[in-house]
Image (cartoon, rainbow, N blue to C red; front, top):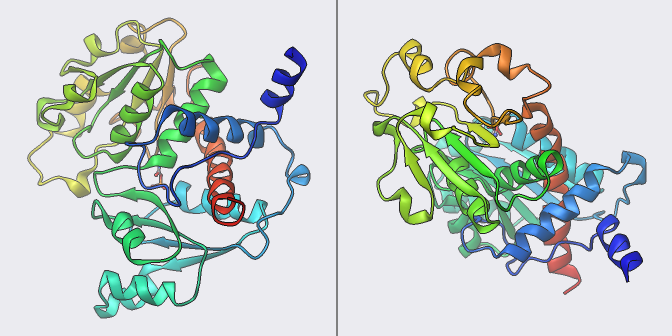
Length: 322
Ligand code: CP
């Protein structure tokens, strides 16, 4: 029996999703989340030469209406590692620039019969809208202030590989919570997996009623990170602000930026995470960002490819092998 359990652990099955799309962590159950994380954990340890290219002929369109480095490239790498045909659509050179509506663009892309669209958009709900009108699967690669589900999944995988089970961990999410889709996805995922989540933000960047999601809220970083095992820092999303929400960057760093002195208040083995892109000297001291003992920022990027492989594989399997 132990042998079988060991075998399942080292070769976890393809992740099982109840939907043809991955639009949000909210609404996903613990088993779906864990099946993606465990499958990605397996992919993360495989040599590229060991990966079977069984997504041959599976057409994936990367449709990004907002800038991205990590998410766009890692979906492309993930798809190509599994043998999929991945095509990048650059909005700067697309007909959106000539005034085409979102739905007309969606219908045009749909006519090319892709299997999957990976959509990033500045408006919350745009990927869901695509999923309601198109025949193919949709993955939300970050929509406005709403959700960024694969980011939360890769964050959870990163934590698990470093600290073990997420249940019972104290995790502080600090910074611009109000404008952060990463925070929202992580809150849903980490509370579903049983972590104790604390959110830290200046009052102007703390959403109202956040406590209804099962988290504790702090406007003092030193109190919010006390004894925690993981500190997740968030970028100030200036592009989503009206301009009055934050003091100067220098003042922000003084109160909410993480430096070594503040880090000493957390658990003595606490790890630091940041979804990127990060602003050194604003939300994090540059020396901490590069501290290989405490910072998991590079590992997060590495795990991004594994999580996206597990996601593409699961959606392919849902379509062709159900
Ligand atoms: N974390 C993240 O979404 O980064 P990108 O904007 O570079 O994709």
